[in-house]
Image (cartoon, rainbow, N blue to C red):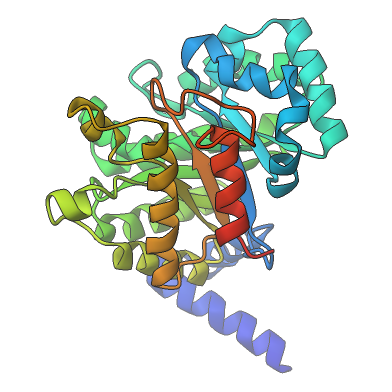
Length: 336
């Protein structure tokens, strides 16, 4: 028996014991989790502009394209929520903009629901979202990836159900996505430290196991939304924990994705201390803090869901604009 075959059988046996499944399902689990999920030699940069003011920031990217040319060269994926695409822009606008994205070589990503108060099952949520996605593709948008918005947190906090329910309904949702949109990458966003570090591991493993049992490909990435201001404000959590989770994802062959945002902005705004410089300085500080402990995500995700920040999206030459923050962050922290 050659060494590769011996290693494959050993891996299957170990997976079966750890996951409590048959060797056959273990083989499926390994094949599904390995497919398309090796970490990137070159990291990926996602840019998600804020959605306030009727989508003004996203619109400006296409109405003033000359004002963020260098930023475009530094990112891979431009993303937005499917609900905002549906509510804020006309068919004519999206059709023209998707054509521009293709010309620029930018991938299209979306944040989506999977289990939500308005869609308490994976099937219900997907049924609501599917027409939106079909509209986008009909208008020329090629959806490269979706990131599910915190299903575990939603089930625990909003639906008041157990983790087994979150696993089953999230898996049902992913199965529908894989069946109807087989070329889309699917990732999960979860929070930290509101979801403790020790809870992320069983969640990932249980979801991957359930998908393998359903003969459905597993996660393409795992994204962490970190409320990092509480590290200092309440001595809760740490970047070392985040780095530990990054390593754990790598061991599972799942690319690790990290959101960079101004975690302290809402609290500083209440104290009258926040402006656009707060956004810029905050994401740069997060970049330094995570780099200091040798953190290196496979996906750097610069995203604002704040209601008023930054106040300007373009130009990239303007101090503290959103595109300027993405450009400067990428040049400083992302090693191609």
